[in-house]
Length: 290
Image 1 (tube, rainbow, N blue to C red):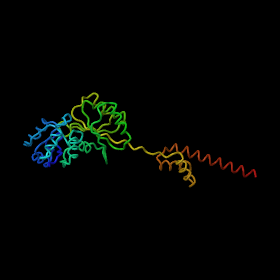
Image 2 (tube, rainbow, N blue to C red):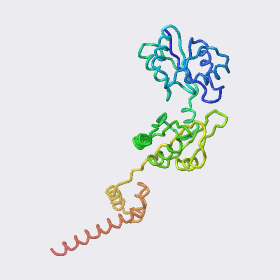
Image 3 (cartoon, helix red, strand yellow):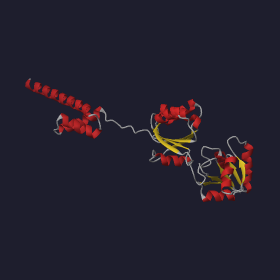
């Protein structure tokens, strides 16, 4: 029984491939490639003569069956046009089928447009959410983005040049004008990383024809600062006033502690002081009437 190897291939620069990947591609009996023409360029560059068959999103079920039969006797490698098979490409179908049949599935990691874009964006501190390609239909795309708007993570997605402007427009409408890294043609001759906002990118590509493959890294939403309630501000002011501070000094201290507007806190302090004066006057009046 053979092993299915998921072999990462260059996302542009042909030198970005591991020694293990080259050895695996030489040793397996068969390579299933998303595009055999594209694959032959890579294999020819490294003098690899392993037999190739095509496997892409339009391949018939018979091709899956053929590859499973090959696995009964030999090791098989899967490669995509670029990067890691099984991520936003049809290699996922083979992974699921091979695993279901009990074949060993082994990743041979390497180049990835996702990690390259995340690293160079400067927008990801901890985790991020990878979306692959968004739905092509505008209504579905907007619904997907709306469902993600409240998540506190940067978003990473692929986009084709002919849909870029529409996607940027939907990103701005649903997520707001967040920071954005537009990563184009990574590791290739015309590689570019533009650090903009979503709105700036939309304006740019409405007048400039997008070219190449894009990875978009959308910054996380700014954290919403919790504001102290009026009741909380009044309680803090009472403490400061009871400690002997003037209304102005109490307002200044509470504003520093909470980040609230000093003017707004001062108005509350005057209200408190006025209320206290009224209570004091009422007490004096009752005492004099006994």
